[in-house]
Image (cartoon, helix red, strand yellow):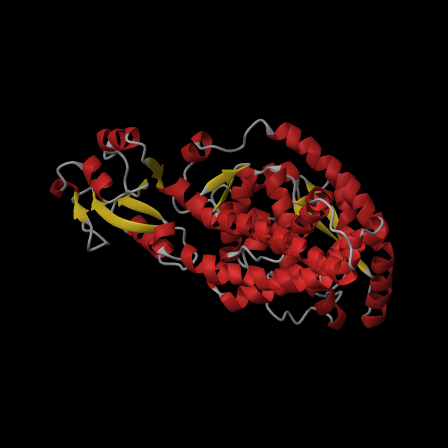
Length: 461
């Protein structure tokens, strides 16, 4: 994987994305040439169209990222990828048309969008048929040797067997005398030279997956392997990189303290984040005020009670604040106290089902962003009653409050909607990853990917 602004991106995604950019530019140029030949126009030098071609590829690529074209499902399913490519290119064309209207038209945008749209879909689908098939081969996956043969090694085996996995395990080494979970593991005593064994297998990474590390770390072996240029990783860091979450079953305070993350450089990033929140929330409130007013009136007509409801949530550093949302439940929804939401929750009103699906009920929270109590991106703020319960049951739950809560977040785009203690545990793993690895780049990625969640109702309830 390639680490870009503290966030890991698979080599396959980078390669596929670079080829997509080249294809989009080529298709844009082809569309221009076809249209120019039809009207007898002189093409002129390519440099005159460079800005338009780059702009076209950038807008469409952004739409592809937003709708999940580079997600695991799209990478392993051609049908899934084709459907999302059609949506992405269509959204890209709409966005370009809008920009053309606002900024002033160019012949390229007005005359060639139909050709560019058709050509882009065909080229991108073909790219996935040809290149995607090659990327799925084990030759393009990192070769990993696991030191350990217990439950952790078995978890790595299960992870490697997933279609979207970017690595293949080429062997397991039993490092202790305990009974192995992985039957095919080779005892360390049967390997004369572990470094030579690593070289013979063509290993690119060694992962330490011991169940008990005290007095059992093979320091001499690890040092020799490291000096040959092979990457050595511990179990928790490997899981974090491959899954985009902090594994609560294996981490401890010392790992969080000494691992990379929570850097002091985020002070500048926080200023940038706040400036963006102020500008974007003010603009969004101005643009959506008529929508909020309309649905507030519809909520009043649909069911008895106020159009808005105010609820206390836990924010930055554990401080309470009030969020404002369009009411989507009956006024007596919590007559018996705070409750987790459930699938097909009977407390949700008829209109509430719709505004929840399209996230319209969240729009008033933009006011909390403008005031500085929330951000657009961050862990979802929870009720104080639930927070007290979850902090008792889960390690490191309080650490999620070290960053400002958000309307959308890393957990929201990666984990389906959940409303239970177990779901909260899984979402906490993603929230800790965000708190540990926050950068403006990750915020941008989350904001783009939120469109995918809204369009396909992933996580909506």
